[in-house]
Amino acid sequence: MSDLILQRSGILCVVSGPSGSGKTTLCRRFSETDPSAAYAVSATTRPPREGEVDGVDYFFLARDVFEGRVARGEFIEYAEVHGNLYGTLKSEVLGHLEAGRDVLLDLDVQGAAYVRSVTDTAIREALVDIFILLPEGAELVKRLRSRGTETEDQLELRLFNAQEESHHWAEYTYAFVSADRETDFATFRSILAGERCRSRRLRKAPGETTLPGV
Image 1: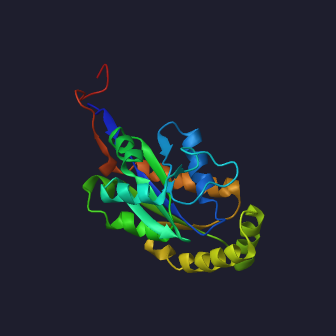
Image 2: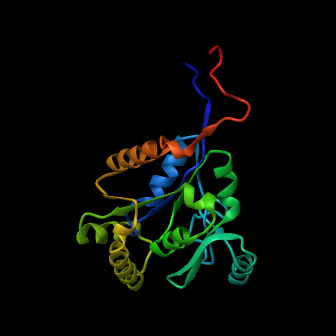
């Protein structure tokens, strides 16, 4: 019996969750430990925080530059959050998907909804969305305070937005409650491992029909 040589199309994995849910850490860790995955750096109009590096943490853009790139259709998604614009450039995604690499995005619920509404077939077929819930209100406050990056007023706003965001978990294909870093990472990896095995993501490699020696 002959066995086909198969190639896999890339996954666009959108991860959402309240501030403090660890979504960015999960995406970065997975991309750093798996050569078949890439973390897409978002663009934003907010000023960089201490220690943040342009092109690594975010692409920091002036508002008029960001809006100009929106007008030219260079974003897959964008939204205004906490008074600043955030978005994902097409250049950070499409090339990876075409090459069979997975792209990881951590987005708020607005951004995730925007991606779901995209009519581009390649994006729709590649999309997998995951929501990470925090176990309880006290844990949310604890994790936000541990960041040490917000004033009390900013913390109150993030708490309110986090509670509102959590109402959207059922809109996602996958959802799980955050436990600890290792458990969350194991759950995250298992979701992507299963998605990589979907038959609709596999295609015959060009110029190959059978395994060598068959």
